[in-house]
Image (tube, rainbow, N blue to C red):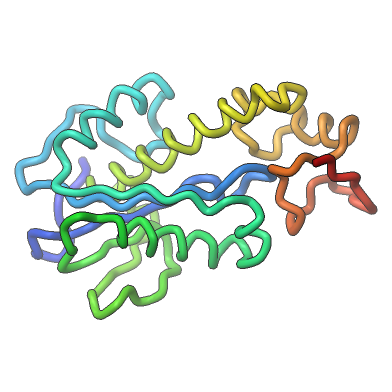
Length: 201
């Protein structure tokens, strides 16, 4: 059973990201402040939900949240920052987008940097414990999935509409056959035996 609040502050923002482990595409972060009466029967960590349920949840979260923000860190910025810093930067920027300033921030995982003067707490597996982090995980995942499905049209040979950029066997085989695209992360090991990969524009 997910809990609604960790800190006791009514304006508590939960934040999470999606796409850290992918070979291509952005890291997408989201932050959400929920009202103290928020409820939904199947809100959970986005990884535990079907794609259909995540897509149903997104408009409900956006309609009922006190505030939410979603931020994309593209693959080039992921390469320049490193993926951990990209995730933290994305979470900070998603908090920047909140139209209501939070009094406290809860973060999925165990790594974060202070955001302004607002107190925060990192929570391992927070997306399976607190509603606001779970809601942020749903927004981050659905916005990222939409983006990957869109760029799939440009490069269908990588089947991003299915693998969403994760390092599946099929995705790696497509990189081996076709090279890498402008959406691939150059700082990642795209192939196990990586020597040199051609990047197409």
